[in-house]
Structure formats: C-alpha cells, structure tokens
Image 1: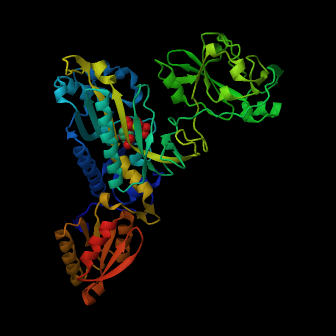
Image 2: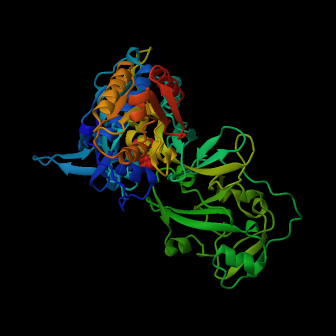
Image 3: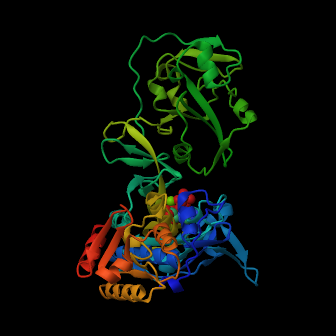
Length: 571
Ligand code: ATP
Ligand code: MG
C-alpha cells in the first residue's frame, strides 16, 4: 500500500467531543469517523487493525474447537418472548416492525438466536460438545454512548456459544475459552487480568471479565497485592472482619437529635464511624421491602444483595411509607423492632461488632452498646456478605491487602447452565436415551473496545504506539523527499524487498514535507519507520526508528533487512 493512495485523513487538533485518549488518537490518526451518536465508520487504517484483532480471535477460537457461523442481525421478537427477555431487556434493545407489523430487534446479543438454531438440529449427546461463534455487529441503544469505540451503540463483537451434555463438559468448554481469551489478549500485546465477575442469579456458574488495565477504564477491580486473585468490585468476596473482643455493655436507648446520617451520629456520640451500623432501605421491582445493614464506613453492594433476592431484578430506594409500615423509621433504622416477615439482610461483618450504635426505629433516637450477635433476632434476619470492597480489604484467598485499580472490560466468559435451553426447549437425548436440556456457555469479546483499550495502554504525546500484532502496518518506509526521483526509487526498492520478505509495510511516497510525514508516522503509530533520505542514496545508509523507544539505528543496505526482522520479533 502507498500512502499517496491511502485514505487516512489525519488531524493536528483534537476534536472537542473526544474525551479520552483512544478516541482522540483514533480520530486524529484518521482511523474512524463518527456517523451518529455511538456509531462509527472505520477508515482503512482503523479497519486494518480491526481485521488483525479479528484474525487473532478467529485463529484462537478455531484452535479451541470453535466453528465460525453468521447469524442475522435482525431478530424476531418471538424468540425473545420465549426466553422472557423481550420484556426484560429494556431500552437498550432497539426494536422495530417490518411492513407486516411483525416485531424485530437489532441483536444486542445472540443467545436466543443460537439456542433456536441448535434446538432444531442437535438431538443426541453424540453431537456434543459444540462451539459456534460469529464476529458481527451488535446494537445496544446505550443510555450514554461515549468514549468512541469504548462504549458505542453499534459495535463489533465476537460471540461464541458452547453446548455440552453435562456440567463437567460445560466447565471444560469454559476453561478452553478462558485459556483462548488469555492467548488472544496476550497476542494483542495487552496488559490484562482475568477478573472474577458476577454471574447474575445463575447458580453455581462461573464468569470472568478480561480486563485491560487502564486508568480511564470504567471497571473498578480489586487485585490482590500478593496472590493472583482479582475480581470486579461487584463480585469481590469479603470475609467478615472480626473485631477484637471487648467487655459487652448493656443495650441502651439514647436521644440523638438531628443525627439522621452516620457522620452526624458518630460526631454526636463521639464514637468512630466503624462503631456504627447503617441501614439502606430498598424496594425491589416485585415491591418487596429490603432493609440492608452494614458497618457505618462500608457500602452496600447492590449486586450481591440482588443475588440473594430470588425473583427480583432491580432495586430502588424504598418509599417512606413502606419503611414505616414495616416498623422502621427512615434515618434511624435498626433490625431491632422491625416487624417479623420483613426482609432484613445484615452484612456478616456487623455480626462481629461489639458495643455498636444503631437506630432505634424512632425519630431522633438510637441504641448504643448494641452487640448484634446478642441483640439481633437471628430468626428474623439473613446474614451474608453484602458489602462493597474497599482499598486494603483482605484478599478472600490469601488475606493480603487488596488494591483497587481500574480497567476496561474487553471480554467476558460466562457459564449459562440451562437458563436458555430450558426456557426455549433445547434438549438432547443422553446415553440412556433420556431427554435433557443442553448446558450452555457464552463468550464475548468487543473488537472495537479491544482496539480502544490497546491505544489507552500504548500511547505518548506524539500519538499511538501499536503493539506489532495489531498495528495497521508493521513498518512504514518513508521517502524523505518524494519529489527526488532517486530517493523515491530507492524507497520503492526497499518497500518491495520488505514486501517480498512478508513484512506488512506501507510506503509513504507522499510529496509532503518530511516533518509532516514524520508527524503522521508517530501519530498513527507504526512500530518501525524505515527512513530513506539523501544518505541512503549517497552512502547506502538506511535509518530505522523504533516507535516505542524512539531509538534510531543506522544500517547498511545489506544489513537493514535482518535488523527489521529482528526488531519486529522483539516488538
Ligand atoms: P458493559 O458492562 O461494559 O456494558 P457488557 O458486560 O454488557 O458490557 P457483554 O454483554 O459482556 O457486555 O458483551 C461482551 C463484550 O462486548 C464486552 O466485554 C465488551 O468488550 C463488548 N461491549 C459491550 N458493550 C459494548 C459497547 N457499548 N461498545 C463497545 N463494546 C461493547
Ligand atoms: Mg460483560
């Protein structure tokens, strides 16, 4: 490819709407252009990187036993009615009608579609295991599309679905995908962590998010400072914190005027916040009241809470009326005195507190010297891990402190069990001729998001620094003065030799000033630049610049090829 023919409109200035570096640089490097909110055109350079990422994914999916297929983007509502998700999916699903008034959606994901596809054909355990995947556009009408390809509305996803005859088989498929994902992100040259993730209400399942470490990332993750435990903040398991023993004082009610939040209360009673118990009152979408209690300095983890509430999908703050009806008093709540039958969930750390402070379920009053193990009625409460992880909390595996860091979820692997196969009647006959639902897993990678994540991790003030495997071109040959025929001819020769060697190379033959071309090379971020200037023509000296280190090497005409090959291998 010659730069004189390449459609790569580079910009010197940053477009105002691009908030994060990957979006800014992709725009400036002429890789993408916006078509509408959260929707992007890929220009040739951007598309080359996308294709390279897809190819790595494809090779690893095939190596793990996946077979590539292609399903339609438009999906009939009937399939989603079967799984119950037509109603449940909400506004992220882009819905439409055809000329006959039949309802469709633009696929936000393809579990329903693929379950319908295999249920008609897979009849016997002999056809299992089966892994099918596609690399295709998804559409999600995100509430806040932003950050360019990171959170767009139309985006390219690789989605693979596995089908097995039993749980053991499903777990084998899961492990194969886990390993394949690790290879994919390693081959893409990314620094990432497989992070334990929430798997919703699917019992006994696994899920990991493959998180590319980046300060701009939307995911907050807890990583152990000693072992390799890592989990999303929603998932991070926490053991109860055991408070040292102390003399137990009798429960006492005290007046605490105007102390309707934890800080005011702690100040008023002159106790540390860690000696207080706080309450959050929720109502579920099934109109159930849920009172959650944690230590005053802890936060409730709504995902953990929801997982304890069968049938509920959403939580909102409870109405005062509902709280009062259960015997509670907003701002002054405690499990003591709440009506039996109310859903009271207490974080397990709270049960190890002594002489703590909690509300008295009446205005301007609290109990102090509360020892939950003694004073809470265990019959009426559920005790569980319901809090959010914080910096320094103990690792659930080894006890060392956890460190909170940020990252970008580039992929996720999930076991689904029989959630879809049962709802949609996807069954097979096992060895005994018994009809059973298929065990499924689903595995997604955001291709555009992976590209954005790579830039977040690899850039400097001059532009992108592509990992070699996903660079739009590995090498650019620059004819410093393309108006000089000798230089251009020399550069053409080098270009053609590199191509013959199998190097993915671009020739910058534009009749632009050298400074403009060098700036573009740095901005676009080709891993190696081979510079052909007057010295090449006169002395046979060829310059090679390594984008990542800025290192410049000079080689002879005879030695340059071996050097390029060697440098590429290191990148
Ligand atoms: P998020 O929590 O970021 O919204 P998700 O968990 O809903 O993502 P999945 O359903 O797990 O996403 O989709 C698989 C992969 O698709 C994600 O890991 C991510 O890389 C990519 N992806 C999801 N939503 C978007 C989006 N709006 N824009 C770009 N890529 C996306
Ligand atoms: Mg996900």
